[in-house]
Length: 194
Image (cartoon, rainbow, N blue to C red):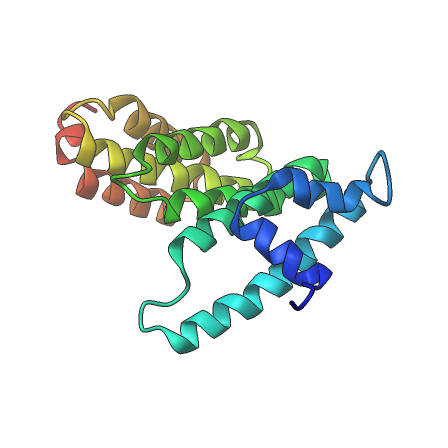
């Protein structure tokens, strides 16, 4: 029986979402890992899983395995979260991708929670940081869309209102107009209330 390499074991741990094994890899070298060590681990995982996803894309008309993608983004979110401020922007991307990939049916509650977490995290940074603003506004929009589809009309009022207020207070004129049009396209009833 062939013994698996360290890289193969790491890929298996990512696919299985075994964070204790993944984080154990970094803790083998340090009891108090640095941000840089976490970022290096994330980079290695991205490389290994990128190769795997490329192979899956070539061999399947459906592309990469969705469950592996979800485990991959979940793993990255955890690692970047451990990396602290140095991993914050990458954490936002991982959470956003994780939320986008979750099924609207099977993972709806988690999908809602991931968008809410991202909104709460980026809200205080949105006016000072363009990337935070991107994740803040896109997450509000996506959460609003999901609420429109899965909940009763009007349940998304607070979400659309927050996005509308942010657009009016903080966006340049052209971007503000596009955002307001997007709100009205997704929630026509909202236009009658503001």
